[in-house]
Image (cartoon, rainbow, N blue to C red; front, side, top):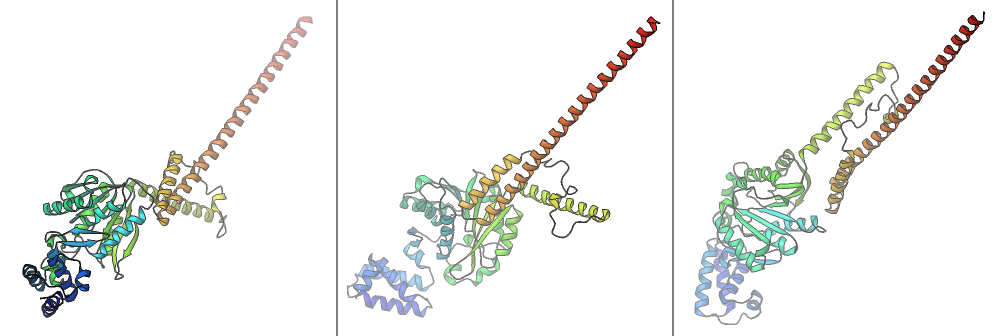
Length: 423
């Protein structure tokens, strides 16, 4: 029996079992059975198939007819730029997940020596694809599955990356190892109640632990965000894959845990798929909130003073030039202004180099604020020094005048005594 006839029979069987990609699947399975490329089978479809190869092919077709995914039948799946070993105990990589790789390469286009963590690595397709693209990156991966650990090691050895990655079997709640510049995760995010509505080849064959996101779909995402806020460095990035309808919930969760939302990226079907955020130190957020509140309160207090004095300034005037509005002791609580200026300028340049213009502008504004505070401090010191000098000069002149008066009085007394003695 030649290749063309074998493919047609398999196609008919798969079509009867409602397999959408029946022809493509038949060609892929036959190329696996005869150990030849799909292209050579299509171009040389008159070649005869041996009996053993045909029997093996029939077994593969029977399993595919029952809905078993092609990746599990041929034990491999192409992702990004490489072929990965896959079996039934790890999730099959999806093309939409490649968006994570694209975004990471954009963010770290000009940065080196990045240490990152992949939470729930599975087959290792994300973690290893990033390492392959960036030669000076180092990675750590954690997963709750022992089998995932074995599969990822196979793929790391296959790609020659075993020396640049550390893998651990651990739940995220129990992981305390290190601080990271970047954390990546493609967590389970399907609501428990929606698992039964998935396609048969997904719900019947792929591991449920890699799909089940709990009652609300974000139970695993919640754990990852909370723990990532401890494991990530300030200014580090968190890149998460999410479901198409989870954007708002995840954004609230990130903001609550001191993450700044950089962007939400859509997939090929124009659905929200990936959310990128930056860790910001809590004390910075509190400090600036308090400073803004102080400025607002100062404005309100002075505004009431203007009203009561009948001297309220016109709308749009510059309050900073009004003596009533200026602080009595400028920068009293900002004695580290110089250090803060340097810090926020560095953070702004780092954000700008990472392509995040909004965050960099935010940091530059903070730097400008503390520059103004520093200028006010210097001006205050100068005026205070000048006042001290004038006061000391005035006291010296007063002393000299007092001495002159005393000398004149003593002179007059001496002259009076001499006059009396002559008389």
